[in-house]
Every structure is written in C-alpha cells, then in structure tokens.
Length: 153
Image 1 (cartoon, rainbow, N blue to C red):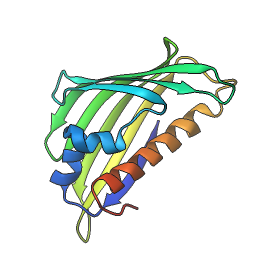
Image 2: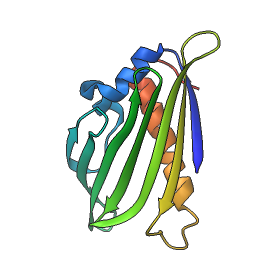
Image 3: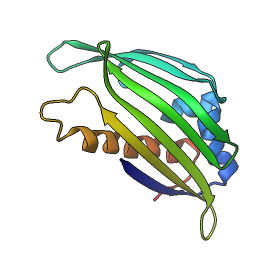
Image 4: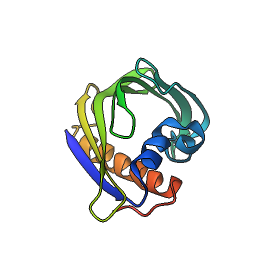
C-alpha cells in the first residue's frame, strides 16, 4: 500500500473533471507503447479498458492491458476504483485505489491517491515492483498537473 499527495493549483471541480473528461484524461492517463486503445465510461459500474503494445529494447513486444471498474464516485470529493494490470495476458497486479479531493490551505486542491496493491506475478524477486508502481503513479500525477495547467507539489 502507498499514498501519493499532490497540491494542485486548481479548484476541486477542475481536478475532478480531469478524471471524468476523456479529452483531458487522455493527456495524463496513457499506456506506454503504440497502438493504444481506450474505452472509458466514467460512472459507478463503468470503468476503462485500455490496451497498447510496448516494444522492449531487444525488439520483443509486450501487450499491455489495464482494466478498471469504478466502485464509488462522489463529484469533486472522491473516486474509488479497482484495476488489473495485465502484460501478455498475465495479470501482474490488481489494485484498489481511492482518490480524494480536498480544499488546500491557501487555495487549490489537495489530491490524495491511496493504492492497495496485490502483486500476483512478480518481476524477479519482486523487490522493485512496488517502487516501480509508486514511481509510475507519481509520474502520472505530474502529468495530471500539466494537463490542468496547474503546478503541483
């Protein structure tokens, strides 16, 4: 389990909207690789099915898939979802994610991303899996800040 906190210089409605609006969402929620496809429905019971192909330095390909489902959405306050990360038809990990949006001291929005993860297929001894996921989440939230035009800390 890990949490990442960001203070964004935008109001809660704008930050929340970056999760819901597909045009903004595609600026910061993307799979690596090429040929990406996304099917996103932002409502409880909806979710996203995203796929892409990533070419490794040795020329081999990884088929990536991320499948999510929204469990709870409270406008401008909270999003709860589960997702699976699948590589070459093997589920690598599953996660329960809670994202909260609060008014920040001095203006803007405090976003807290809390992820409870279960690694089902580890890379090597698994010691790099959680740091890799946390770093990926941090980079994604950096992208969120850029997508809404606000600096984040």
